[in-house]
Image (tube, rainbow, N blue to C red):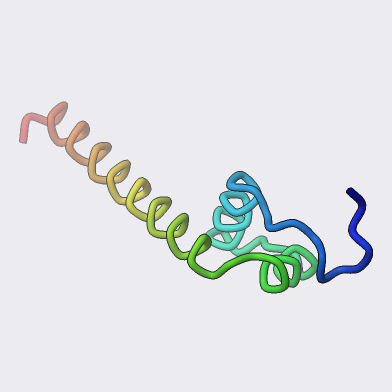
Amino acid sequence: MIPKNENERQAPSFFSVLGSVLASMFGVQSTSKREADFTHGKPIHYILVGLLVTAAFVLTVWGVVELVLGFAGV
């Protein structure tokens, strides 16, 4: 179904939300994409994905540090 106007657009998919969160974390989010996120997205989706991405980032950094320290014999 083709939306009749902007208010009838479908909510963004998980991968769209993930892409927006990753782009915003790196500071490269376009103005048009940000406006679409605020217009059609639900804040809770962006908050939850943001928390998951942040946790994954922290765990990755922790894992790399543990790996390097293990190789250094510390």
